[in-house]
Length: 378
Image (cartoon, rainbow, N blue to C red):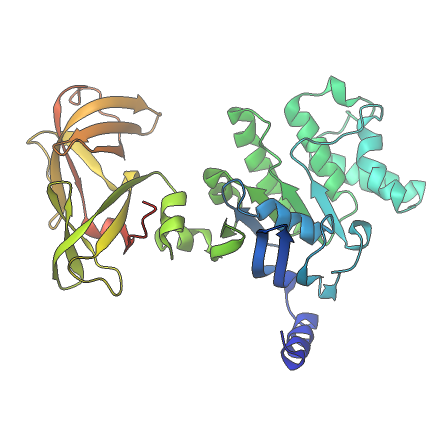
């Protein structure tokens, strides 16, 4: 970044509403560029998720923000201050790890108050902050217990309390719910949104779990190979993915690819292993090119064969119902089409008229899916 541009950026940061800003951050391990020229802005009071598969660079980036890894290039600003060269304790951050990292020989109260003790705060102030945060995480009365006397969910609450007790400028969370069972994760997701809303501290949350990121966050950065594929509001990413990777990574998708046979207006007709399908045309595509089409399972409908009443313009294909997985308010229906391809449809449960092994009709609107030029990865 040139000097004039940096000075303008720095001046803007002093008056901005951003809690965190990353400027062209890079990190290399040998020949691997774990973080590749990443810039990011997180607003005050925002719940922000770094989402990506294993090896995408999200945890490395979080460690750079925390000061646990040095940035090879670029700058980190927290609360408008350049903390790139500051150690972790001088960055105004709190951090919550996947494995809790509680001291087994210390009580709950001692574990939570540890950051305050390191800052040499008075005993009175420590007690005030401890009382406040115990109320927040609903652990009042557990101060004298030890970690081995707590459930997994209680340990996670203690870890969150320790991260929040010093009222940091920003809280960093590295897959904090990964070791909890499904029901406990759901409970903690609700609680974490409540914590964040009540204290109005920005959370930066690392996860590989798409559902978790969509449930918890306001905005999401989807990472792949050390860079951001897309950053934006979670509904924007879900409904308007900018790349094939984002479209495939968010939600349960059916992936269809084929060669363009012809085009009409904004749609292309492709050959999908013997089935001709109408799909939206990506920019720059012409007949003979290949398209990858990602279709969300919840955008589809299933009916007994011959009994569907699709919306005008829908595509309807005949299939055989292979399996049904009941999930409460909806079911996942796995079907085999005439070209031997499998699709999954998430629709309302219908155990009366839909039978495994029977013929069904599956339908959807062409505009319900996302099309991209095929890059060979589909």
